[in-house]
Image (cartoon, rainbow, N blue to C red; front, side, top):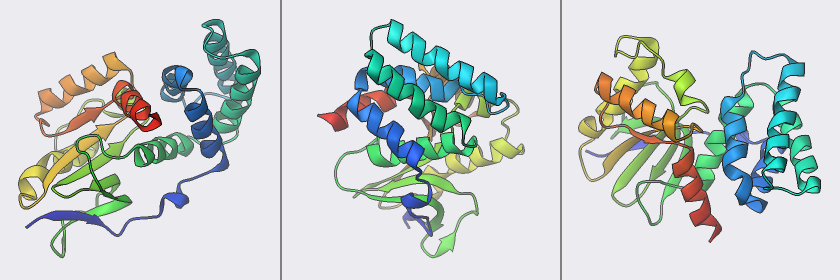
Amino acid sequence: MSCSCRKGKKLSSLESREIELLLKFLKENPEAFRLILEVVNSFRPTDSERVKAERVFLAVKDILELGLLSYSKAGKLLHILNEFFVKRSDKQRGNFLEILISKLGPFTFKGKYRRVNQCKVFKGNKKLSDKEIDVSFSGKGTLELHECKANMVRQWRDPLTKKSKKGKKLHFLNSLPKECRGEKEVIPCCSGLDGQIGTEYIRLVFKFYGYKNIVVVGREEIFKKFLERLR
């Protein structure tokens, strides 16, 4: 019997003006995509307002000095990021990633799909867990499920055994391909804005703990998918 992801929320419940502006800027300036996502990835919610503003300024300064943006565009980005980080809670980062993944579509299959956000996994009419799936893509023969964390290295720290709080979620995701054997192949994914080194590190960590069924999607995979959607 195949599994499905149901009882989700509308994407609009995650959206905000700041996220909309940042996504629009990324689409208009793909050359700065990687560095902007690095800023979002490295943001620390415990920083003071002053430190947040300083980090944003220095990041935009680096992008400008690399010649990726003009002065006018850099000024616009500075304003957008200040609004995004300084005046909103850390939840904004998570919502941004979920919306970005949602708009990009599935990473492991092509073709038509149905997307559901913040849903629960069902096998037939039986709910397998109360654990929430951030983004689900259901295609003809595939169900792709995403657990989104803006900073995976910071999130997926030891211990990650199946008895630990964080490990329970990973164990659940990893068990789904076997639990949901049927007409659809279930592919659990952990997605984040980490760079190549951080992403590879998470893959090694998951391998160490035996979470071999989880596909790790990092900044480079997201950037590649982003460019595909622009074509």
